[in-house]
Amino acid sequence: QQPVQSPQAVILREGEDAVINCSSSKALYSVHWYRQKHGEAPVFLMILLKGGEQKGHEKISASFNEKKQQSSLYLTASQLSYSGTYFCGTEQGPDSWGKLQFGAGTQVVVTP
Amino acid sequence: GAVVSQHPSRVICKSGTSVKIECRSLDFQATTMFWYRQFPKQSLMLMATSNEGSKATYEQGVEKDKFLINHASLTLSTLTVTSAHPEDSSFYICSAVHTIAGGYNEQFFGPGTRLTVL
Image 1 (cartoon, rainbow over the protein chains, first blue to last red):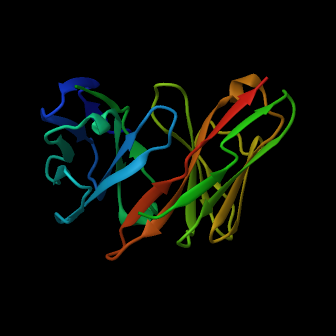
Image 2 (cartoon, each protein chain N blue to C red):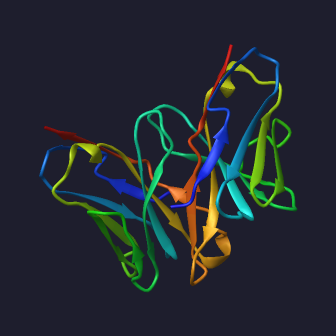
Image 3 (tube, helix red, strand yellow):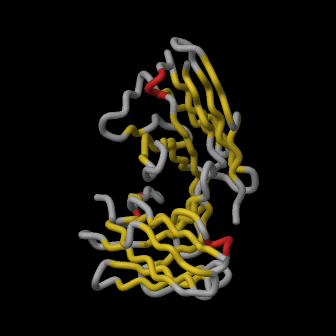
């Protein structure tokens, strides 16, 4: 089942912060975050694992609340290069072989 | 991160022809690869799971006879769009699964193939 992402879009000025949320109605095994720029393929940002381990990407951080079945991505001191559409992908269990259900995406625009 | 290549990056073909798209994992072996299609301003729609050495698993609503998948080796999966029609025009993206310590699966995407059927 597709996770729900919010907000749909956010406009930031350079240096501002933003939070993108991803929630699921089912228990999650892992949450993956990607950023996609127009006309390009998604780029892996981060994976959050059950148990709290996470593998991150530079100045972007994220949290994973297993009880609430949700994850949040934090864009801190945003840069122009952060612009793009952010997708969360959720994995239901270890036997899913990496199969992800993707949210609808959050469009982020960072302006000078 | 791991590198996945896709070829061709763009293809334009006439209606009724077949188009083959290759997906390669360049620095790791991938037992599992996925094929997605993405329409403008929409999310990634999973089409099928490609497993090395076995038949692909297709998502509901995806015609397996139209979208032929062959996972010939641990580094190569191909998607053939047979008898392509204008409604098949889309951005096709593959991904390869890289299993990391602890048994967790990272998924890396290829650069995508933009298919235009005239």
